[in-house]
Length: 315
Image (cartoon, rainbow, N blue to C red; front, top):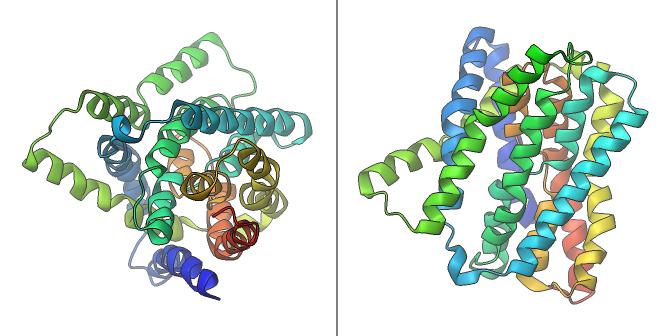
């Protein structure tokens, strides 16, 4: 019961903030134009600030473990490639491939990881290693996949190819990752004013993204893609954990490291998926549905995995 309450305390506020955005849209306090601008603001400013600060504040030299970081990177890469290949083979609706793949592999590792580990162990010294091993790859893969999939991308000419490649290298999220890694590795001091300003933008990223997601949520539209949405949610919350958590245990990871791997594999689909999908020309319906469903159910699935690991005395 304690684990269930703990999980609900993390996931329910996220879900309820989405509900707030939906209600504000229904009572006409927000309109479609505002939501469009809000999503653009999140994509170009607040979410890059959040990614930058996550990387900037992580002291990788103190807790660096090359084997663990490499494990997180390889597992994440395998997940992305397998999901993408299987989706190409079995998905008949080519327009949803990018959204399905992103919603399936990309969880709230940075958003939920630190909170979960800190709540259990009091500190989060290992979670940043999981973040560096997975989150940059999350974003790079999302930009590439979303750039080359979706409606109108099935016949990619030279002009469209160059446009997509340019989009990859000018993506605000990838620029933020590069700058965050550089600042962390070189231990650059931003100064109080600059750090506080970026932090203010970063802390606004999640609530604004959740409100925008809720305001843009269309229940009727989600029903149209309900089957792939549910399948993506199943992959995100259960399938990846079932496959790769035993591998992590076999590799000798326990305690805080195993909890961080659990977050990497089984955290709910991150709201930034919706922002990125919408701002890269995708409908966003499947993504928004996956975020809502996985956020609602993750309190139960994460509790299940935590209970299983505690029973096996792994954490």
